Length: 112
Image (cartoon, rainbow, N blue to C red):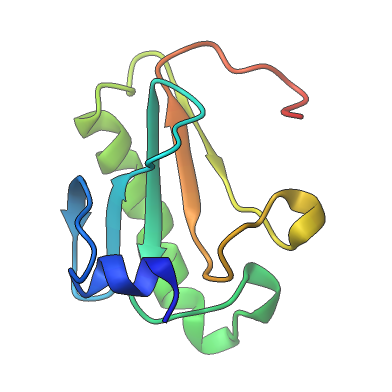
């Protein structure tokens, strides 16, 4: 099981901000911005490149929920960024697809 699967099953504690039957959102333990929330499907999908057509509804619900999660975190007025890393060169460290929701300060472009 990945770290994220253990968080989704509540084997490992996390600061959860949103949970549905399909995904869970929680604060990152190594934040890269004042607000850094991870939105993670409960069912493991190793990375975006391995998502299947049947995952489209789940991924869409996660993207749509990100707006409410960001608003609840106080980011609606200033804005926020969503990031999905795919592969080692992109910075992927956990082989379980997840969205990074970042905000709370001006974010630079390009990101890194």
